[in-house]
Length: 360
Image (cartoon, rainbow, N blue to C red; front, side, top):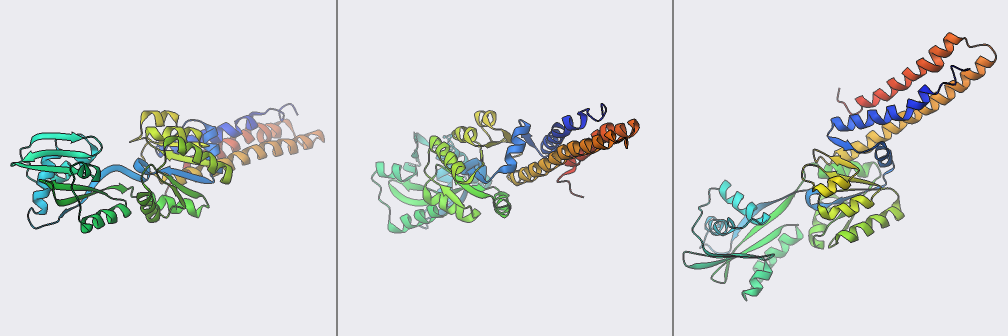
């Protein structure tokens, strides 16, 4: 009875399983900051995701250059725009310059470069003033757009793309379309989560048309657009009240409050801002969204192993203790089955988690 009362197997039932689960995740590039978060994600009912940098790559890419007339041509428009944008450090400018360099566009001399924060840039090339920017910039210069141009811009907006207008001497000559590409695995990750019965929600500060286009393409259950960081926190709390445990994934400084308010906060590690990584409970070091459904499966598998360990430890010791009272168990058998042997069973059962997810 003294040997059987030793709690070795029971004492290591939980930590052995949890450590195995955390090590398994680390091998996949998933850093879990504690066993309680590995346990919590198994109860996830809703996965909420930020759009920019989480569902998308967070990198604007030029999709098309449109010339509204034969003169100047698409190549000439790209050359004019890249020549001016090279003086700006804005992400849109970098995307256009990279695209121009890749396509061998000629870089021209620019005079009187000027940047309009949040609107665009301008400069003089070959004696002509070139404006590159959004509708706000065109409005400042009193430039009116034809219905055809507005229709193209509206269509781009509905598809989640950004339109940059190019003007020469206050006359519209072309358009440049940019978009933030979706992550290759985003659609598959959403599909797998939905198959598991988990509701998917997208939270973004982008306008409703952009959000609707992304949500439709990824087949996300719900989306919230035009929201501020504090509103993300409110939405996460409302989702928890309505559905249960909420897991939130994001990468930016605006996502930190929502990450902190979720039952499990996940940060994208490669592109993530320091404050979001510091706040998060789990960090995806490789930014792979497929690791979220993998995490949920790993968590469920880990909890099954832990429950098995605990139940087996209590049940077997209790059964052997009763047999020992009636003299059916010897000291050697108590050690072999009820103490050291049971502890080894718990350890080996926990180690099975290390092999979870491995391809044969």
